[in-house]
Image 1: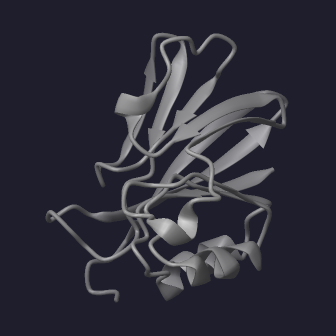
Image 2: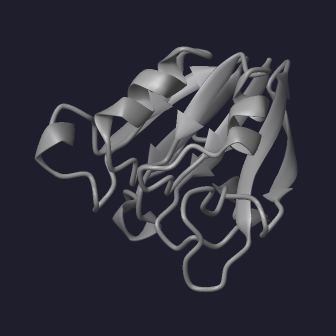
Length: 152
């Protein structure tokens, strides 16, 4: 199963991001979507797992603050801001979050911590990034995808 993991799109789905979405079996979005039209677009490509970010206002009240789900034997916990993670993460394999716009893929305390960075409008001089992940028999392999700075 192939996942595309993204966050902090802030109202922009770049053509290079859409190319990757077309290959996804599922899409994880860790918040700061900014417009309902982005969700509609994402749902055209694959089943969508999404949480509300701090910039997702009234229109996003129906979106969950956090999600706990399992795909291909890998248990995920997803929240926009990692400061809002619960103290008890027993049974969770992989944490997905956004907010900082900084890419992170790190094994820590028996958990895989994933922040795909931001693939929306460039902010804070950060690179434009997202993740592709392969899930198979309870294992996850993550690949960093960086979008060139010239791309709009």
